[in-house]
Amino acid sequence: LYTYFTGNPRWPSSKSQLTYAFTSTSSVSISTSTLSTVISRAFSRWAATTTLTFTEVGSDSDPDITIGFYSGDHGDGEPFDGVLGTLAHAFSPTDGRFHLDAAEQWVAEGDVTTASSDAAIDLESVAVHEIGHLLGLGHTSVESAIMYPTIKTKTKKVELAEDDVVGIQNLY
Ligand code: TQI
Ligand code: ZN
Ligand code: ZN
Image (tube, rainbow, N blue to C red; front, top):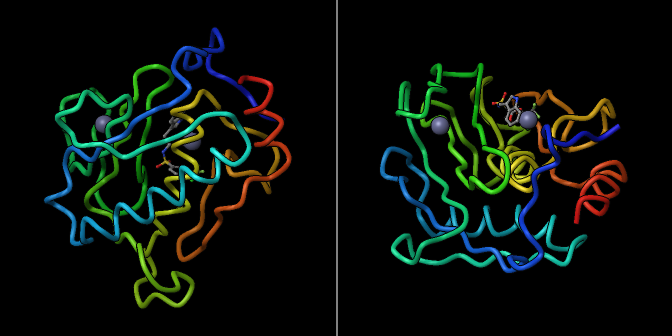
């Protein structure tokens, strides 16, 4: 079953039109347009089942959500650990920070299941999971759900399960 963070934090109803911006992407080899497309697709999964909307804006326009790639210790007390291990993290509402480990072999285009590296990680799959955290979902015991606390390398898992949908709809 789905869970929430302690105290059930959520974005307030006065703020259902959320904005996001990329703040640190220079350390990764994915083009900014590919990044925009993949992350937009990940947000769409959650927008489809809530009344929330997500719009990309420039990083200078005070976005609600910031997305960036970082390596090792990047100043928030949750250092990244190189290839595999922690892939990304996102903070609970209404913090809005979503960080990705720049050391991972991110796959943003093409078929991750046939990637040559055994450590290839599908960016869209991780983004759908982390956006769940950004919106207030914790982990679930339902294995088919996006919020289940495990992801395999070379695997794509981007469709919300009923458990994710009920979880987000009971919060918003
Ligand atoms: N990152 C962990 C995660 O997102 C970080 C984390 C642990 C966390 N507990 C948390 C973040 C509670 C917010 C709230 O779960 S991870 C998955 C998983 C990771 C894990 O790099 O281990 C995915 C990143 F668990 F689903 F496989 C993406 Cl999809
Ligand atoms: Zn971080
Ligand atoms: Zn998680």
